[in-house]
Each structure stands twice: as structure tokens, then as C-alpha cells.
Amino acid sequence: MPRPLKNFVIRYIINNNKKVKIMLVWRGWGILAILIPFGCIVILELMVGKPTYQSSPWYPTSGLMVGAVIVYLVGSWFDKRSISRSREVIDTKTGEKFTLSHRNQFFFIDMKWWSIIVAVFAIIFFISN
Image (cartoon, rainbow, N blue to C red):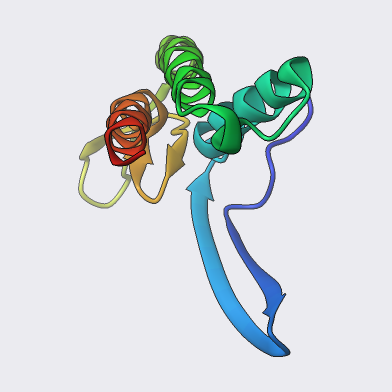
């Protein structure tokens, strides 16, 4: 499996000839918590053939909901995988035990909890339209 992207990334978006700084913070594969739901919307938009937000609020809402389910499943799979790969380390000076494990977080929130945030965002989007 390829190595995950870097933990911290700063992207610049040019908006009206002004640079707007956007900082995305993730650890491990946590960036997938946002890429998967928006990827589902893009795939649904390609299947429908017209901009989804203009035709009906059901399309982006269903895309976000499917994305939320996929994010939960992928996040749970990563958690199970990281528990099995975790290792215990003992500090030589204090004798204290630490457990090192791989975390997959986006803005310091685990991937599987991002599914709830995405689902709430989908419901708010549907109600507002």
C-alpha cells in the first residue's frame, strides 16, 4: 500500500486575484474523510449528467449519505488494522509503557466520527434547499 500523504498541507486558492490560505490538517489516511463524500457526489453527478445541486437536493444529499457510510466503514477498517499493528514501548528513564498506533484523523477527529459530521451536513444541506 502506498505511503499516506503528508500530515500537514497548506493549499493556496486564488479567488478574485487574492490569495486565500487554507490549511488542511490530517494524520495518516484522514484526508479520505473529505475526499470520499465529495467523490461520491462527483460520481453521482457524472451518472446524472447535469449539476446535481441545480436539479434536486436529493442527489448531493444521497451522495453525501453514501459517502458517510463509506467513510465509517473505511475508518472502522483502519482502526481495526491499526490496533492489530500497534506496539508497546517502554520508556527507559521512567519505565512507563506507551502504546504506539497509527491514527487516521482529519482535523484531529478520527475518520469514523467524520461520517456523523458528513451525515449532519447532508441533512442540513437537504433542509436548506
